[in-house]
Image 1 (cartoon, one colour):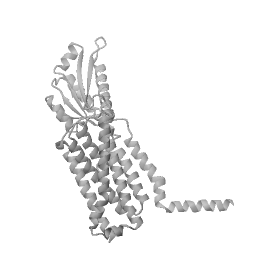
Image 2 (spheres, helix red, strand yellow):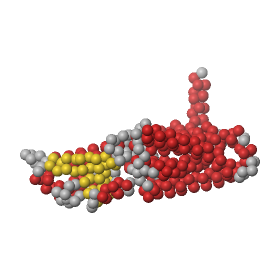
Image 3 (tube, one colour):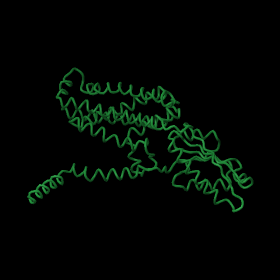
Length: 368
């Protein structure tokens, strides 16, 4: 009995070892997930861009700026000359915080024993804004303690101002992220399943026998999901404005237009998945599982991309949701126009054309 049992165990072990897909699930997935989650899931916010407005230009202000720049949490990316440049610095997207010194910073500190430093943070992502202002406050406090003599304590007061989201509402961050996730997952999954269903039922040949060219037949399968996705967009925006009290600061027409573009990108991805699969289960697994984790982790919605290693930052560029998330934040939260999002828009257009071209080309080959 024992020998028979061991024989069955040996048989099952050999069967598993011969199945590369099973081995990948057993050993590859844990390694990939631990590596990905280990680098991406972090409460730290590193390499945040900082703009400096320092009319004082004295020893103390320069020393404090050097402390900020030397920290792993900050990179000084811009030195400003006038207060009017602060708004442009934030709109460029490269700056998460601006540090502003008064005209007589060192003089105030050494003659009145107190001085003020103003911090302005981009609070369109309230978690990141809160974290980086806390980091900066700790650096300022440490410098203050080192500077103070035993009998005369110096005090450097930090004045914090949150730009775009003064109340630090979390809706300012998760509404753009939810829009990107819902549109990508729903459109990709529904389109891929719809076409594969026709293949499984054997009705695709009937559709292709119609007077319409095959390309128009395939596009016609995607159009209803485009229209239904616009209902999702309208629902999300209405709930955001009237329930979550999240105003649309920019152009509504531009926001809707970008949403249509992103929806077409997601539909193109669904068409591509449908050309490489022959069952609804596989199509659903690829579109749901394959899209969910990259969208959640590499779009900047849940975890700042700046925290991640360079390979993951590069990988995030092929995630369509990343670019749409940036577009929605810039238009809806910051009130910016097409001049601020033209690069992200062109990237989505390029992705759409690429996915559509590959999907339609592969579909022709598979049907011939």
